[in-house]
Amino acid sequence: MFAPETFAAALFMTVLSTICWGSFANTQKLTRNYRFELYYWDYAAGIFLISVILAFTMGSMPKNESSFLANLHSAAPMNLFYAALGGFLFNLANFLLIAGIGMVGLAIAFPISIGIALVEGVVLSYLIQPKGSPGLLAFGVAMAVLAIILIGKAYGELGGKDKKVPRKGVVVCIISGLLMGTFAPFVTRAMTNEHPLTPYTIAVLFTLGALLCCFVFNIYMMKHPLVGGPVTFRDYLGASVYYHALGVLGGVIWGIGTVFNFVAAGFVGVAISYAIGQASPMVAALWGVFVWHEFRGASNRARIYLLGMFVCYLLALVLIARAYQSS
Image 1 (cartoon, rainbow, N blue to C red):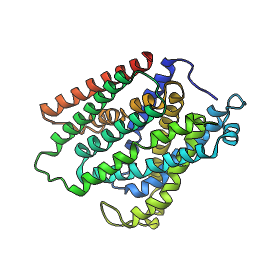
Image 2 (image 1 turned 120 degrees about the vertical axis):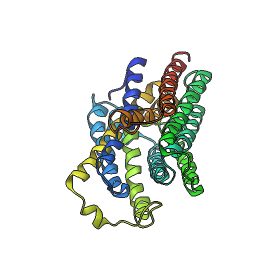
Image 3 (image 1 turned 180 degrees about the vertical axis):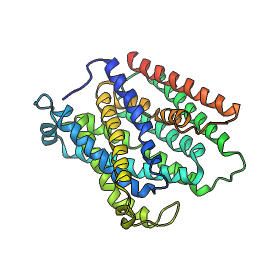
Image 4 (image 1 turned 60 degrees about the vertical axis):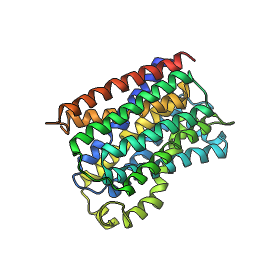
């Protein structure tokens, strides 16, 4: 299988994963009022499809005991379960995050959900696989959390200060963050236990778990959405081919980022790879600034928050990279 042989190559892959994770949502923006519950079916299919394609290409060359099918055959069943469970939990968390954004807005949802997930995921993963300097890693994670808070403050300036925040939305974001932070430790287990999985095998099982989750949670959310009225499969089938293609494309983009993040984790450790990957809100903010013009006419305070966010994320990247090099 293909795997990075140097720290620079692994770091490059984690940065690419950050870009992918922060960019996939642009496809959902292009669907224009298309319900997320419907978009998600194509998105989930896309992440599974690209993980299988990469497993049979990058993950199978050359043909040896580490190639995808050989690893799938020799892996411990519990490791397969851990990888699939991680994907299932991620999917639950992602659904709740999107619902939370609809209920309380990005300004509150991102700092709560992603902030909790970042700290929880890094700490639990590091306890299982202690790679890197814990002091530098903790400092880097603190800078990343501060950057997420500054993103929220910047978006908060756009939304005004008079909007009342529903308690239900905050609770949904907290649950989302707690669930989001659990998938990295399960991936770490699958990668480090006896008869471990390769990153490509983990990605296939992870995205399969996410897809299977849709047949439980997404169907329920279509009937009992947290935001808006119920939707049906008739609405899904009635959507344009363009909308379905955008959903699959969004899944492919996110799936590439996930595979690259897992592959890099095989070199630097899940805690470091996950911490860098969770810088994706910075990439999403860049899209918002330069493509969607979400901050056009924003106050000087919002611009200062954005500048502070970029500085904190760059510091986080440097510190987390140094954490590995100092180990």
